[in-house]
Length: 75
Image (cartoon, rainbow, N blue to C red; front, side, top):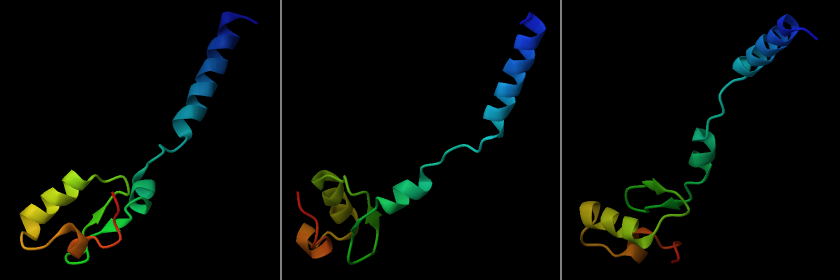
């Protein structure tokens, strides 16, 4: 196989790769948002930590507790 043939094969292979759509994780990330504030309905990823939820409470619902806003969340 000559260098010209190799170059053509490489171009074809690269064209096939370029034709594939980019994979996006937006749908996966939306599906993973399973923790929801019962007051304002803001969603959080299922891997959220207590610190992030506490920041949400401090900024939006200062008079509420974590159990008031997120009754199904467990540490």
